[in-house]
Image 1 (cartoon, protein in one colour):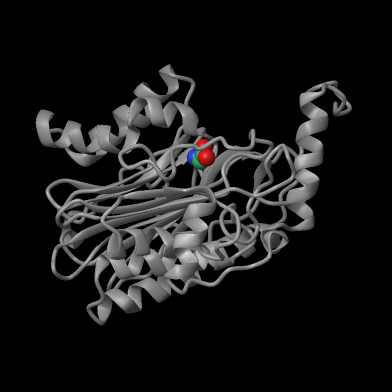
Image 2 (tube, helix red, strand yellow):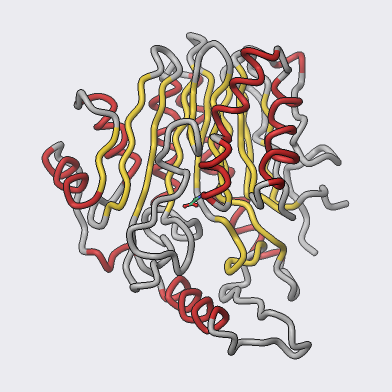
Length: 347
Ligand code: GLY
């Protein structure tokens, strides 16, 4: 088992809410939730993930320290996650059943409930930048398909050949997922095969990879951003929760900023991110209680697996998940970043 280098707590971070630090600028990020790899996990593989998360948190921390807006910080964090091929967004995105990539992203600013979203991108290098461009430069809220790529290109955003998003590991995952779906891949116990192909800490074949960031800035504004390649072997044209405001992404200065990761359809049906905000706004629940109810009760009742990261207007951070692990971390200005993968902190 690997160690958790910077995790100080024995809990899951799901109730991280240090009263002393509330209200201070803070960033939280995730790189997807999932099940544990059943074969041996190397400390080196875990370190790759935790180092990547920590580096992104440190960069965001500096931005917050110098007074950047929460919107700037979440967009930069998600852009960095998209550029890192360990995670399922941007480069390293999973494949559709047709062997293509279709990328979704959403950005929301808590002041004025401003939002932008894109779905089914195929050539825009950083979908999160396209979502932000929709927020800032369009009278609309969401674009889909080739028109969304065209919009991004007209906004000056970099376009790449479609094959740029793929990696050999993701292609292997598609092949194995398709073989598994066809019932031909079994492990030596006759169980469903572990289809992880790169010794990642979470089983990449059973991981609901999406990336996301939420932040509270010095001015008291919240923002959220989420980006994904979707689910391995998804039907071409399928859109999940990630680009849907209130499902996989939501920010409201009066309540909370949220980014979700998981099996998209239940998150869509539950309006998971908005549900947390609603429980806080109308039922008066504290963030930890509202998030716990959605992730541990509402979503499982619909077959939803995954988790979310959230920052309340108070600065409280909460990162619950109902899977065995979630790549995640948070950083307050002036404090060491905290990064974790598994449910339990390792000794
Ligand atoms: N949560 C990402 C998706 O379902 O597409």
